[in-house]
Length: 480
Image 1 (tube, rainbow, N blue to C red):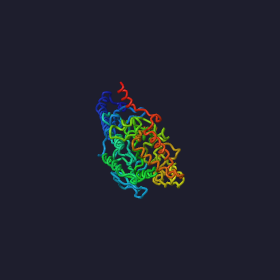
Image 2: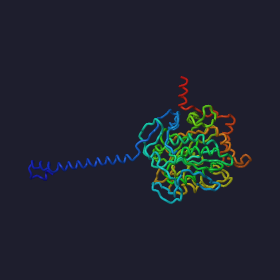
Image 3: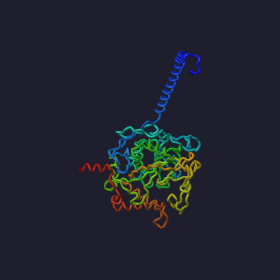
């Protein structure tokens, strides 16, 4: 610019720049500074709307190989913030819908846009704790930076056996999962009661516990079988869960999933960030100190009542210990929740079988076709092929998270013997008279019943039992 003023003296040029260009440069700098400040304020405003942290409980003593569980601290329970229809044919009888407010259904595809039209029924539910920003873990917690928020709802499904002291374990179980960040409105509980064999006393006790905790449930009246349970579960999922990108926790009412002290929404956010669509768990049995099977008491904590870590399922009857702990709502697990059923295998697994033909679901008396009740049938074009990579083209698939959790199994209490006796007798069918069993795995229940009747308790020496770290610490303190 100075060159353009070549005919003007140096003094005049200097005065020209001082009067014109220097103020203009100053104004430009001021504009840049103003824009920068506005951008910072916008970023702060946006950040204030996003989750900043989660509240994790200070870790208590670890149980050996188990990750620390917030709500299973040896000195008590975690704190939590809680709330304080189906077909009517003989094979699909269920009742007692509490708290699931329903509206005309919608379904959500993988792109997150909600579309009307599957004719189902939807639950009225609120955002999960992970999306809200903080989760209450327990007293004495500390603030730690949290992972990305999980934008999906998290449901917890379970079946409660009312006739086998289901009300004994239930308060401990509810506190555990409420402490992990599952909201009362997102519990999907079936309560099974067989009025042909048992009075309503157990059902009334379970119902009272659930009402005290503000947790909804549905009553399924009739003989329990794994086939009927699968049917009831599929019907309930279709009725309540409308966004197939949601997560579902699958936990029996004696299974306490251990996420290493992390709230479930935070853990699943990490899994989702890796592209995983389900989480696996390894089951570890918890047993009373002397191998006896006492009734579950309201206090102390269930960890103190059953302090030993054992391998009952695997060592006593060769049962499977791998579990599906959580999965995307577009997936379905098998009857025992030991594996996810891939889309490629779903037509055969959930399909019909003839009487006398052994079904992939383990029965010989003939099963009906449940495949139309699965999302594999309704949204067949949404699933990736077996050889396609994770998240290929936005398609759904079964991709396990690289981390597995521990599932603490509090099954071995006073009511287990009667439960297994009833199940073995029903599953055996006419096998004792030279016919076929209803289900091939009746032999597992028979084996456990024989062992319990022979010894009156669990044989700890054959089950690789070991005390938890907290028990060992207390023993050392008493001996010192």
